[in-house]
Image 1 (cartoon, rainbow, N blue to C red):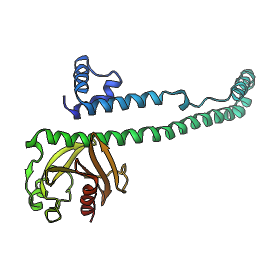
Image 2 (cartoon, one colour):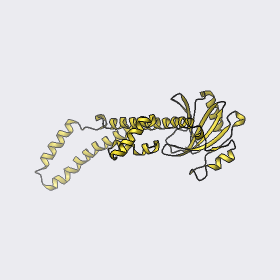
Image 3 (cartoon, rainbow, N blue to C red):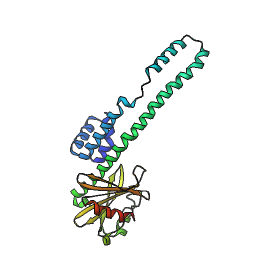
Image 4 (cartoon, rainbow, N blue to C red):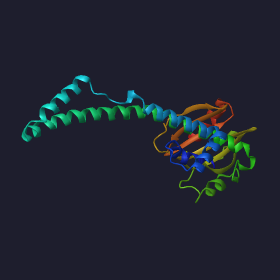
Amino acid sequence: MNCHDAQTMMHGYLDGELDPSVSLQYQQHVGACPACSKALAEQQAIQTTMKADSLYFKAPEQFRNRLRASLRKQSGAPSSRLAVRFPRIWVAAAAGIAACIGVGFLMARFVFAPAVHERLTQEVASAHIRSLQVPKRIVDVPSSDSHVVKPWFNGRLDFAPPTRDLQKQGFPLVGGRLDYLNGRPVAALVYGRREHIINLFVWPEDGSESGAIQQETRQGYNLIHWSKAGMNFWIVSDLNPAELNELTQLLRE
């Protein structure tokens, strides 16, 4: 089982919907994969948070007493009176339900957004680390010529990643490869800086990322990300932040 399979099966595992053998495979993968283990822990934390009593609206005792009294009073009344009074009762009940739903949506916004961003950040860092662990996997198309690297992605991706060779500026293009992030195939463009390897991940933006430049640090690696012209860009390397910012500015020109 790989990371993509584990991500696909995670919710089924949490809901107890997997076959015992598949569930065991998932547990074994999570036990050996820090990224998937972290993603599982985040989802478990979200489930726990969403079950908290604070997310549910509880009608005031006075309102509940009035509702019970009104229902008892109406139980022996003519149908014409029921037709007049029941709508008011249900309007009040609907208002309580709406308040509960509104609180739930607000809480979900603040609970889910950070977890999704953290998962993606960890995914990017893990993808960079994996590429370094297998030297032959760093690039699928080794070339410093952007006119060779960019066409290589044709038919392999549903978008054309912007590809530039920045050798004159001190960041030579090493090549490119396919990778998988955020639940979809992405382009990975590899740049060099002295002995450092820099991965630039590119895919179409979906509105979940801010256009402003943001910086992160995970597992000793520096990450910079932004969105521009309908694309998400994530840079990751052990290169110092100052030089990564220099590359960022060059790519944003």
